[in-house]
Image (cartoon, rainbow, N blue to C red):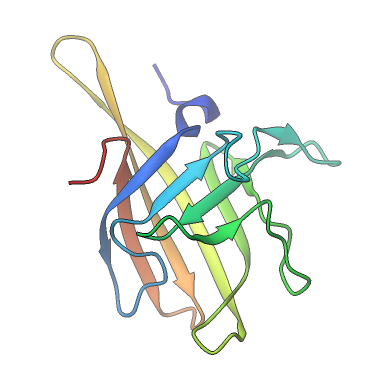
Amino acid sequence: MEPTLKDFLKEWNINFVDGEDPWLQKSWRILIGTGEQGAKVPWFSEDYTTCVGFTILDEQGQVCLSTSQQEEYQEPIYFAYVQGHLRWAGFAKDDQGNPTPLRIYISLSRAEMLDGGYYDSLYGSVTWGDPDQVGVWGADGRPPG
């Protein structure tokens, strides 16, 4: 069975991160379309793009970026679901409080088990500031630890 948007909709724990000074950090969490903490359930935009809200929480559970916490300088904060992938491009504040370009791209990988079941994992890339500074990361639905 091919993954659908529904398979993205849950809380994911970031297990690994690679790249130079990545924005997204290991042990952070990303809520996608859960309806909780600002991660709005899917909807259609005016041009019928499938959209889904998200919230990214740091290790302490503090909101780093969320559909529900739109600031003036930011592009609308939601993922567009395009050809089986999620993507967002906008701005987030750096350590000095300056709006900095941030782009997030997410794919879902399904591992089929010998017993007929399956296990989903996310993998993605984040571009923070300089377009050559790409961080890659992976997540799953298991609790941290």
